[in-house]
Image 1: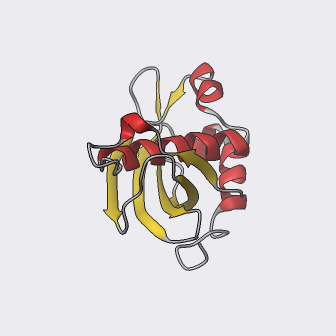
Image 2: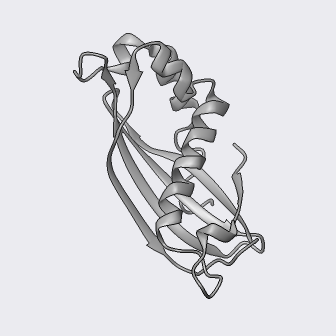
Length: 142
């Protein structure tokens, strides 16, 4: 799957024009939304079906700074999925291919009633779409 492209905005930088660290987490969310959209399972569709997927854990390791107007390419890959919890990995690179950050996020799936949903049982087609992407991209191949 193609990487998501983000252009660093001025408001995302500090006085020196360097991207503030908090924005990388936001870019992971942008990449995740794009990833799910490309799978055909965007947030709007899931919410219409009564499914929400909150973040339960997030991690980001910073490798190289980025600056105003620089392009960052975010690759998203499935690390783990058991139907109830999903772990995604992220690799963020600049235009010349330097890794600027790597991250992970963990999510669960809950219904309108606040209870956990097993997506394998309720939405097997979602699981099939994720399974088709699992192991396609790994940290070594990004």
